[in-house]
Image 1 (cartoon, rainbow, N blue to C red):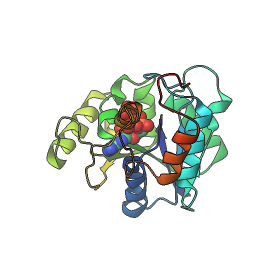
Image 2: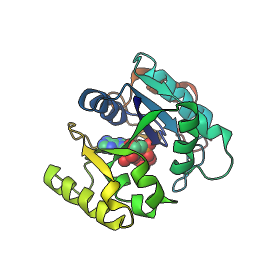
Image 3: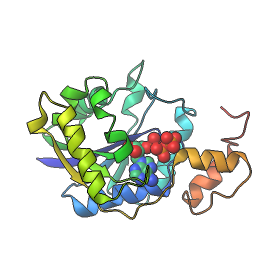
Image 4: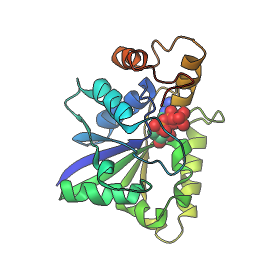
Length: 208
Ligand code: ATP
């Protein structure tokens, strides 16, 4: 049986915070690969064109043989729900023990995800603490336990691990905001991604 992790997100754009989380997962958990899955139609936010987000992901991950980018969500219409992504990937990668990489802020919303109760025990959750509301590691663990309690039905079968990462307050929305007002995004995103954003005039007022 192989062990694979899915890292789903909007990645609008991918930034160093995402990359260090995926690397931490590879280092700390016995997984062979991280499959990056850009959301086609995220349920909760508006996003830039899928082709740009996909291209930036490919640029940022291409030098790591343990990273794969999947455009599996392009095969489905409508809102991109995580449970459908996992089901589709299970067909492409049979005989797999699945992990799902997620930031603490996103994990907190799992009880409200579409069919979240069903999805929760289908994979192990690799949770990255995040500087939202100043949580420390002890608080992060408490939050994870609370989420588990909320997922009452099958809570005893939910597995989660907290990743050890240096906490960085970077987010895609911060990068978009900085770029829009002409501030530097150097060292927040890989250089290839920064060039892509400039070449395609992303994140300006009139971009897609
Ligand atoms: P936005 O600012 O537009 O909301 P984002 O930076 O949260 O975007 P996403 O692509 O939505 O980026 O995030 C994908 C996943 O990565 C989510 O589970 C999110 O919680 C997690 N994540 C993103 N940035 C960080 C970070 N700096 N630390 C921990 N987790 C993060």
